[in-house]
Each structure stands twice: as structure tokens, then as C-alpha cells.
Image (cartoon, rainbow, N blue to C red):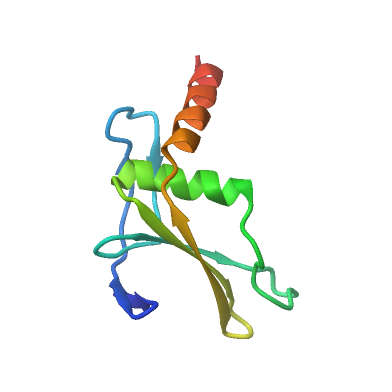
Amino acid sequence: MFLILGAPVSSCGFFKHPQDPRYGASPDGIGEAFAVEVKTRAENSETPLEKISGTHLVQTNFQMACTNGHITFLQSYLPEKGISHFFYVKRNELLVNVVKDITDHMLQ
């Protein structure tokens, strides 16, 4: 167990999507009311991420869909300097549905 922003976080495993077993997610941690995803920067980076990308939004939203969560804290961590930036990501059902529809079509 570790702490994110003062709240306890436990390691977790793989979660299957509740309605579609073709999808799953493995967040880096789960708290009582949130998930955690940690991204480390390349060794030569000077700072953690300043903003998150669309890829990060899709990943964290699918994690929430699979864990039945509504909040993810994305941590961009620069280990060699021991500094982090945190991003609050709220579940976006429209994003999940659109990306899932596109992916479903690609899988058929």
C-alpha cells in the first residue's frame, strides 16, 4: 500500500470490462473512491508532463469503465528528480462509448 495525495492506495490486478470480456484494464493502484495511473518520464526529461494527451484520457477512462470507477489520478513522475505532477481525470461516458464503438468495429 502507498499514499497518493494523502489517501491510501492498494496494488491491484486486471479488471475485465463488466459488459464486454474483450476489454480489460490494469491501473497501477486503486483507492477507496479512485484509481491511480503512474507515468514515468524518460531519464533525460527535465520535468514531468505539463498536460495529458488524448491517449492518457482514453486509457484512464477505459480503466474507470472496467473498474466501475469515476475518478482517476494520473501521476506523471520524474524518478531521478523525485518530482510529480498530478492530473484529475473524471470519467467521460461519451468518450468511452465513442472509442468503444470504434474499437468494436475494428475488431469485427
